[in-house]
Amino acid sequence: MSDDFSNPSRPPAHRAGPYRPAGKKSGGGFGAHRNMRRDKGGQRGGPPPWAGEEDVALLYGWHTVSEALANPKRHFRKMMATENAVRRLEEAGISLPLQPQIVKPYEIDKLLGPDAVHQGLLAEADPLPSPPLSKAAKHDLVLVLDQVTDPHNVGAIVRSAAAFAVGAIVTTARHSPAATGVLAKSASGGLEHVPFCRVQNLARALNELKEGGMLVVGLDSEGPADLEDTALRAPMALVLGAEGKGLRQLTRETCDTLARIDLPGAIKSLNVSNAAALSLGVARHALKRQAGG
Image 1 (cartoon, rainbow, N blue to C red):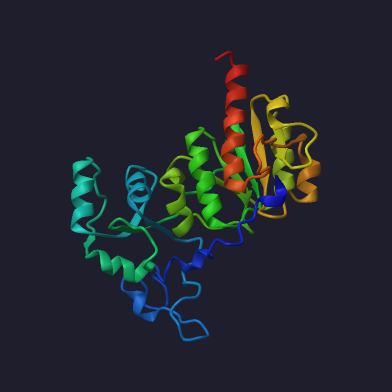
Image 2 (cartoon, rainbow, N blue to C red):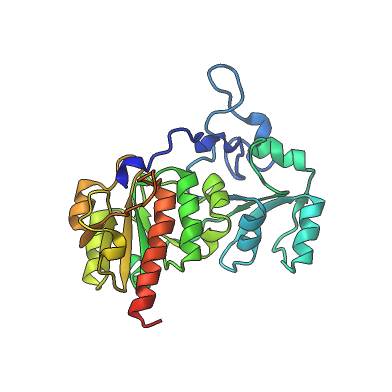
């Protein structure tokens, strides 16, 4: 499991584009693409100034923005949309909390870069609040990420977590990507349904979950048994490690038990986002059986 969580061929998240949020010293806002950085070779690119900032959530794409618009907890700052996108929102019965700036698709391309699939929608919003760990512990199934840093993978994990009714995703305040940009797009609206609970110390948080009655199960290639053969019960927290490194030693030692995923095919390992989807399916099925469903 832990040996193949990495995906070195994936391009870095900062290639998503040179967007700069409003309120920054650069003059910010949706028109700030003129001030974007250049790399050492003089080519456009490099990390955009908003990358990793905690005080803004950049949302683009139909599912990402439409789900956010339907979430009363979201506070929008600015929005750009094409005429077609606005018409599509109206046809779907989605109300707009603010007047969008009507633009052509290429104007959003200039902000995000040509590879970003924005579908005519770009919004800037406040980040969603992080719930306290005690609230996260009240759910029957929680996902814990131990320094999983790739925003594409984390976004895909969020999408799976929303599909399997995960109550919260617990992650560290440091060494984890912000819920914005590429991560939000990869989550395809999942951010509006699964809150991030950010903690300072993961081992301490796991102990707190255990003290609250949660079974803490770490996914590890060296686990003593397959996850399907492991005794699972609610409430439960599934812990996944970083790409390539797997669970850190202290995290492993803090888990109640470790489990692996045995695969019947020629490829014996999965990356972290696929492992999350599979393990959540196994866990949800086990909890359903436990409940007599």
